Length: 404
Image (cartoon, rainbow, N blue to C red; front, side, top):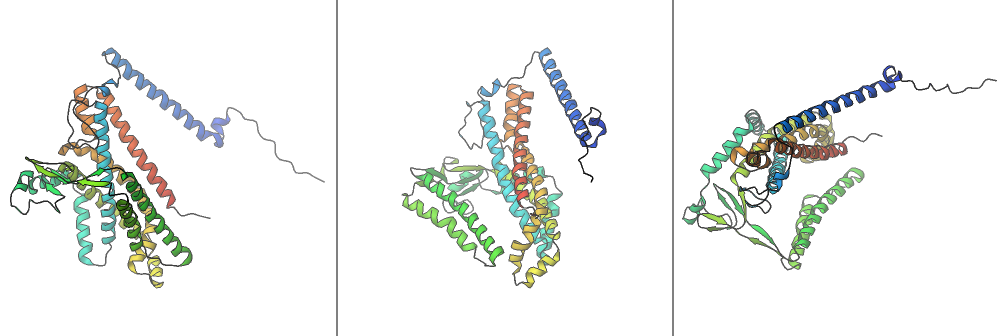
């Protein structure tokens, strides 16, 4: 009778790091990492040595010194006596604001244009094709300047609102569109306003939960629940009820003409609007092509099968085509969001003080700390880009097919 025994395990030898395929790739990667660390250390030491010979040193103490300059768009409190660090924070927030607005607008516009490019209507299809081709093939800087100059030339000046010109009148006595920007009401938060705000955000979460429940009922049980009116009710009714039950704690401060300009309310500068619209319209043309490619990647049989089941064209697009197309659309969409964030650095062309205009512009010139400012600028943009990639990759993984 014979017995089967496991083969003896071979003892580890140093030569296996280069000859054994189980370890060879790791060995080469480790060597490459060591060489990279050595090269970076050499370059860093060389930089510090050259700075020391020139009587310079790396220091970020300048961030605590008074900035001495004004910023036109201020999402937080800031004045000319605030520090350079505070100025950099204002610039960072301005960059995040314009990038966020442009990403949302470009997504909506791109999805709409991409779907309409496949419309059976010849006129609609050609109009969307013209939009995509024109905006994709002209540099975004030119569109920023065009929109900014149109706003400056076409919009009335604030002083014109004193006359009888019907084109220079406030919309609903709340909104003023001028060549300096748009003036909108500013919310004044009173006692109990946080309850209203909390209810508002809870309503948004409720809308997503209800739509997810409706989708689950459709996929698992075949029950088609209405989504539009329930979503609107969940979004508006709780917030309105809490607003009145809490004694209307949130009021509005309307912009008023005082002298040669408006006072009060919130000012959205023309430079912000021009940058926002230009980035959104320009990037939306690229997203439209991504959406069109994603839809065309779905087999036509999917649409025919859904139509055979009696689904209307709108529901076929929302429930069958787009959910599958997202797996093709999302990866290039991440790149478009990153491009928006990086292209927002062109804001200095129209005088919008973003991160590049504050930390990489006036602060750098005033303090002479070029290396420190550029390193911080690179760090901020790198962090923003990595965060966008992280969240979008998480969403992309959630949309992947779940294999058994």
